[in-house]
Image (tube, rainbow, N blue to C red):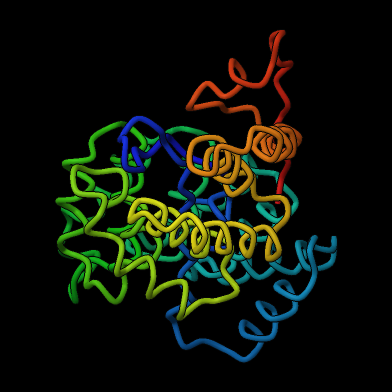
Length: 303
């Protein structure tokens, strides 16, 4: 999912769509924050159940039934309602997922996997204020996290603040996250802040360390373009497309690169048309450049 624009380039007038995706490639896997692993050492059935659910794209009725039955049999255990929520998310039933996450958090208000997943749902559905309230409330209660508030949840909080335009608060939250754990979220938020060039080294490192992440390749491409290397940037945008052809941001970024850096209008329009097949946001008003008539909005595809 492409997010709000980022100022780039030697002229400072054109912008690129940065993506901070982790699996959510900013689509519900999208909040830019991975669901934390189950932290409670329970039975092997929990582990095998998780592995089975991760191996298939949609949950079976049997796996959902097992989660519901185990949740009823173990009324003090938050894992099973959380797992039911995971399965509902995979079938895009977010309302049902929210209900099960509320059950999990009622059993353990400091259950980090449930907080993380509920935060992602809020981010996905644009309820960023609710996401901030959820996470700030958890952070303000030391009893929930005696060993300190998890870095993954701080990163999620930063994304919510950033989505509301509070880049200052997003940056403040991220300062409490070790650089090694801030990952794509740290790069994304920094690129959207007052010192975007300071994210260049981190963006390049992520692209090297996680070569199969389309979002990281895209963000590293933005950093290269900002530094005046359109050739290197184009390679990374194209690599992002190879990794995830459905991700819209790299197509838009290539349209900007071709139009304003290589001055190739034909190539720019070709990339822009491919972008419009995948998304409708137009942060730089490229429709006015390439279209003689208004463009009919195209809904963004799911990943």
